Length: 488
Ligand SMILES: *Cc1c(COP(=O)(O)O)cnc(C)c1O
Image 1: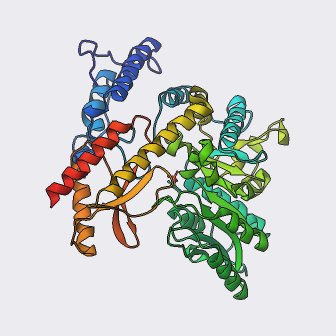
Image 2: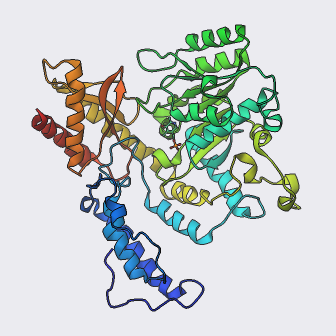
């Protein structure tokens, strides 16, 4: 960050930064952010650093005396930023690309300034009510029925953990109060497809189900959970004395964005009285586009559903939305009321601390509310529709070029593909495409990642940043083809 060298700060005297000093550096920081947004090309999307490079430039001991903001901001610009992977860069096409939009960045600044902790309604009245209202707006935008109550969790992993704990309590074994060890309990079983996110298995670890308590169900040729296989697994478990309690279906799997057949899975869950949790961390955002609503088919029958605004709804990390049809089921799994947190509002208000493992509640709703208002439902739909269109274009280019091959259907904004020079065997193709990926990422212009599809190395191109446009994708296609030529 360029700073005015002549204004070296005097040693700090007040308890905190002086308000005038704050104003001056606040303007500098906002200017830096505006430049960063205006000129992403000045930053490599994947940094040119090796492990330890940044540490080597950081003092091993803390400063004995306070330093001036000029020096601190200079090091931010010189040492920290060049060592960062730039997630908020239009050339970020790896994993699931996302955006810290302008209104959301401003919301984060205000959240930091207010430092509100809405653990109780009393400690954050409007923060609590804004969280419920903003999530209800998002519920309507996705076409989920009224009655789904939303709370904000930090990540989808925690949202899914919360849902699994609520599901576990509905079994009636009183595990939250009695625990699982030292008791004679049946094994509990949680089901998800083999394409489900690792957060499902981890939720099982944390909820005491154990990895052995999570059973993966086979998928079809397009990576969707096979509901008949799910039912067979449940019947087999019941016969063996195992107690099924929960199924996690995925709308937009992480590896290939496949969509599990939620209506058929909901039928199975209803037949066996199982909690249905839908992981729509990425894919749920697409439902904001009217012609994509179909991806949520059957989700109205879920007990809970997670969607991540920090993934494809333009708010920065971290903000995950967990919806539950019966919010009391979540409270029953988590609510505790120590004497020092009793308030005269009693049970007449929502106390957000009751809805998950954390007590403290960061005021995340502000950035969501500001972003929803700034773009509006139509603005969201237009932007996501454009990402879908860009992905379709890219998929069409791959399909039209005999030297390239598509590796999976692309229902959302992620395309899976590989370079396939004629005559190269599958094993050689894996190594070839990995070299190709490394060459592309070494340019610093774009960043793409990979996965395995049917055991084969596949490149992923994920579109989700608001500043990624047709030029970015055309440029990515050029870089990919150049790299394919150069790695041979
Ligand atoms: C990204 C993703 C997650 C994990 O999200 P976090 O918020 O990082 O925990 C879970 N499920 C799916 C389907 C995802 O794509």
